[in-house]
Amino acid sequence: MSTIAFIGGGNMAGCIFNGIIKTRPGQDKIVVSGPHVDKLQHFADAGASITTDNAAAAQAGEVIFLGVKPQMLTAVLTELAAAKVDFAHKLVISMAAGFVCSGISKLTGSDRIIRIMPNTPAKLGLGVIGIYYGAGASAEDGALCRELLKGLGSLVETSTEEGINVIGCVAGSSPAFMYRFLEALIAETVKRGFSKQEARELIQQTALGMASMCIANSDIPISQLREAVTSKGGTTFEGLKQMTAYKFEEMVAAAVQASMDRTHEFEEMFA
Ligand SMILES: NC(=O)c1ccc[n+]([C@@H]2O[C@H](COP(=O)([O-])OP(=O)(O)OC[C@H]3O[C@@H](n4cnc5c(N)ncnc54)[C@H](OP(=O)(O)O)[C@@H]3O)[C@@H](O)[C@H]2O)c1
Figure 1 (cartoon, rainbow, N blue to C red):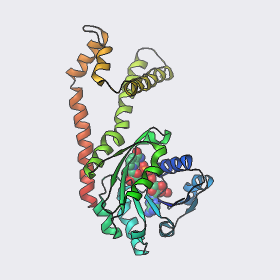
Figure 2: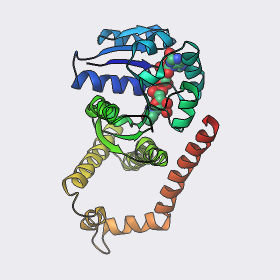
Figure 3: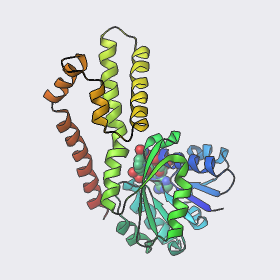
Figure 4: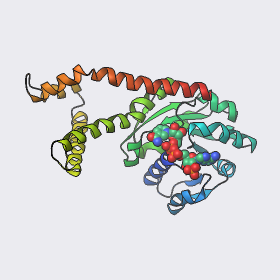
């Protein structure tokens, strides 16, 4: 059993909370803090304590999940340090994008930190969660973190904070990139006479089938799966030619690079 505090009870904290209570029902004592207690009621309904007092929550937790936006984190950690939270005896798990361990330890006086980078499919247990162990996190801390997160999806460890940045962009942000692609395909389907609902069904089922094909055939390159639906001179071939003409790979590269650049700007801001 662990005593777990969530500082900030928003979307991602809720997702992690749900993963924990699903895989470890009744096993942990959980407290969630945030400025608006009414917004935390769903945590209370699921058995957690809720409070507006961040320091009291942090004092109570052996494990502290930092669930506030990166822009709020300095103020929140300063508040906790002023309340003399004994961070050396607590494992801090931060999900804040672009907020490096040294920035956290400067404010807490402890480097017992693990950074994680989840994505929203974690809500369904189908997420990818990047994990980076800070210098002061022990092997037991790592094992506990992995145990708490196992209900959220695949856990991917990285040995650098830049690795966490990359995971944030290619797994954290890319659901938005891929949704945009699906939205565009749905719009093209609607233009050709199908209802929005029919178009959505066609495209989302195709996306699910395609992801499942990748997983079921993970021993062969994805390019081979693509080639299997592309006869030279056929309909798919002509469509792909346009993706090349419109520099699809360059567009993806620019999107990922812009996301990385923004992460690096955040890193500088919060260092
Ligand atoms: N969403 C994602 O896909 C994703 C992916 C990877 C990482 N993350 C990271 O997860 C963190 C949270 O993001 P989110 O999407 O869950 O945002 P969110 O839903 O806006 O959650 C932020 C929470 O922080 C609370 N909060 C604000 N000020 C606070 C304070 N002074 N003390 C305590 N709590 C406070 C907010 O409460 P009120 O609403 O009551 O103001 C809100 O519940 C961020 O660091 C983000 O980088 C998110």
